[in-house]
Amino acid sequence: MINLLPPSYKQDYHYARLNAGLLRWIMLMCFGIMGLVVLSGVGWVYLQRQADTYTLQAAEAEAKLDKKEQASVQKQAKDVSDSLKLSVQVLSKEVLFSKLLNQLAITVPSNASLSGLNISELSGAVDITASTADYKAATQLQVNLTDPANKIFEKADIVNINCTTSTNKYPCSVTIRAQFAKNNPFLFINSKGS
Image 1 (cartoon, rainbow, N blue to C red):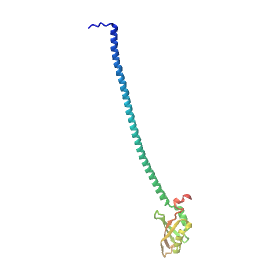
Image 2: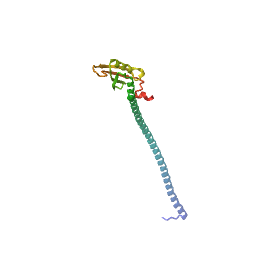
Image 3: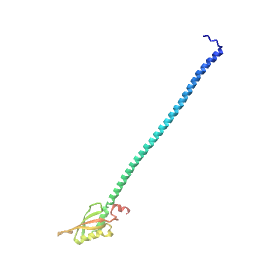
Image 4: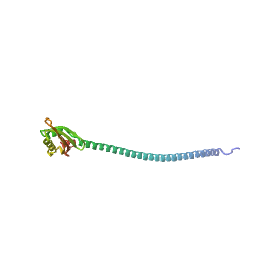
């Protein structure tokens, strides 16, 4: 076939074909750019949702951890509190023996001698053993121990008195169970103010 068209028409057809090809490429590029924008938007939304999900999970995990730590701290605080209460209870029964013995020496009558002091229980009771010249000295010791002016014991009961016929200066042995007075200055917990 012979092309008899003038060269200007040939050139116009050639550029028309090139324009059609370019138009197709531009359309493809526009669709590609729109696809990338849509893909980027979908990716951004997906990432935002994932970030929100992980933020929520992190907040829940932190709340659980806080609860666990709070429970742990509360348990430790309770343990410390219980230990402190136990310490105070034990110390409240602690006797300051150096001061107590001095005060007991003052209360012992001249015809008696203190031979033993035994704390038998934590309820504040003390067993006192003494050697005396006679029954009268043993009862005088019991009366002196319960004297409120001495501030040692609230009450004192004679458990037993045994006298022998020996030539010893103190032939009688007396055992007295005494209960500490509540405001006794010879107990550790009460001596803080003095």
